[in-house]
Amino acid sequence: SGKALTEDQIATEINNISDEMARSLMPELDKFSKSGETAVATLQRLSGEFSALTGSARLLFGMSSDEAKNFINQFGFGDRTSFIDKISGADNLMALTSGSLITQNN
Image 1: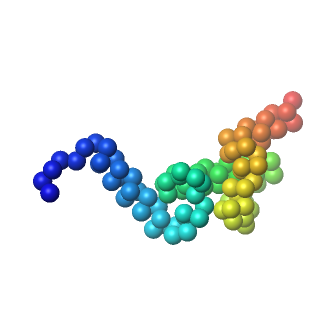
Image 2: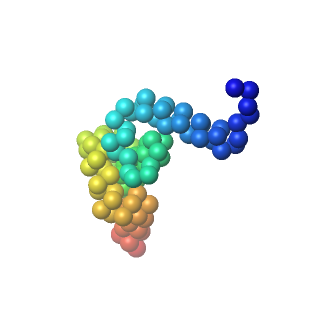
């Protein structure tokens, strides 16, 4: 229309495009989103949860990266998120598992 977009409008459009890209990568993404999460935020959270769970599996069970990934991939996204929520978040899981190793080594 010949009108310049504001920075907020540009940011909104970029977010909308990013969300559509995330949904195209994982069409069922919306069913795993938490209240108020964008598709990109959901994808980032699920990725962070996976990283925390595989990292913890490596630390606690002495698994290789591939073994930990294969182990965690046995569980669905909903199961992973439920576990992470029960342990008060991915950061808490990593702190707990890292701390347990420090305690065991002392």
